[in-house]
Length: 171
Image (cartoon, rainbow, N blue to C red):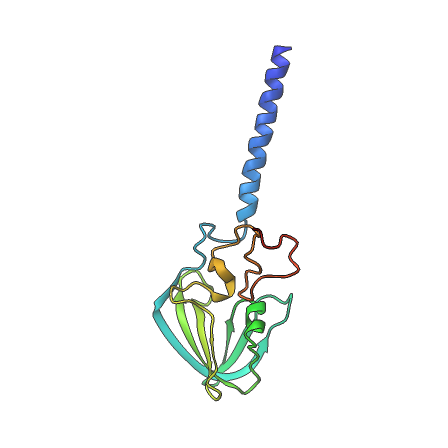
């Protein structure tokens, strides 16, 4: 009886340990760095691009919004960030609009940079996508450092509390 209890205890402990390890590995799979720092953006390394809008692709459920500019006869694509943030800011460039982009170096981004700010040359409208420290403004109050529960934080896209959230504000 004692041997059976010891074996059962050992077996259950092994299952718990294996489940914990699997959960840790599964939560970080395919997400890159998991230390909360996100892409390594360097705001001191600035480049500028000015071009005419060829297309702007942005809709719910279609991935990250993408802006294609004609820069000196060459089409260049830029991934912008959260669709919800861009929609809340009423960002909707039309084909032919002339835009000036401020880019910051990003060591962990496929393009080698991130769009920090977009200015419509004709209207003068400016859309900021990054804070001075390089963190994305479209990530909401956590500054792009991941969600930490629900509480009163609301949407993590910069548009404010979600009135339909079942977790609602606490207090």
